[in-house]
Image (cartoon, rainbow, N blue to C red):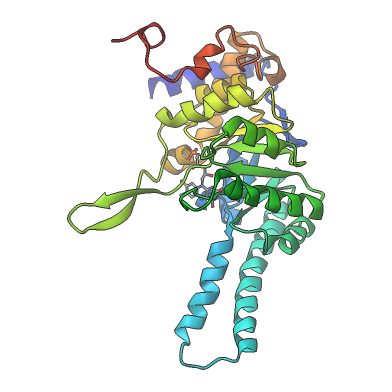
Length: 347
Ligand SMILES: Cc1cc2nc3c(=O)[nH]c(=O)nc-3n(C[C@H](O)[C@H](O)[C@H](O)COP(=O)(O)O)c2cc1C
């Protein structure tokens, strides 16, 4: 609370001196007025929310993902509800196709309406579990006016009969097909469940994508011990979750051949600054906005501007990547995983 008031006073002082820093950046070839993007979530599934995000200073939004599973599930549900109707196979095809096209049409309308309503980039998002459905649809997303397309791809490596390579092949299959289909920039939003994280990130960046989003955060299971049920827990991140993406952004930013957007655990301006120092060109936020509202974006921007003023930085480029593994004075700290006294300072 006190920190917010201090920030407000400092940013007012900065504005009055007309020395507001230039917070613009580029991400995936898109010019952003600042590095804060609202991540794909329920926060971005309506034009009203997107207008509010833009009015509060967000530089871009990633629309709520359209889920391949969701479309298949809706179609299966319609068929199940009418079980016993003895559909001809043609009728089943019709229902499946109808459900798919109605979900897709709603999504395309959201893109078109958002583009009319705000002047910040609109990044569409699809969740892929196969490369079957999406190539046609990616084309339609492009035609509807999306500025870029984020592919939210995740395969939980839970099948013991499949090797890491087999699981990972799907990523390349999807990316190869979609990068060939559209001209708008494509990004891959991934998790850290890879046996060779660094090599995988590099290989992903060689597919022609323009951005990597590190990392997605998933539904986390918990067990209700009295009801014997599996339930969701920790839907929202905490600031303590910043370190995993910070580590990997710092380690990968100077190596991958595309831009990186950091995601997970970014709850204030300082966390944005850390990710930029590690080498991210932009960040994506969701949980903090769910918890505190879109007004939080402006507070984060003010915090960045104050920091830049204190360190005499005029542009983000002056410090993006300054603490990446390549440039940090003690890069070994990013590689350090065990708690040795020398590094942790305790024990
Ligand atoms: C309620 C909720 C819904 C989300 N839905 C999606 C989604 O549809 N697609 C996606 O790629 N990420 C989705 N995410 C993940 C966020 O975009 C983001 O990557 C993740 O929450 C980590 O960022 P945070 O720590 O700022 O929340 C969702 C997150 C939340 C909390």
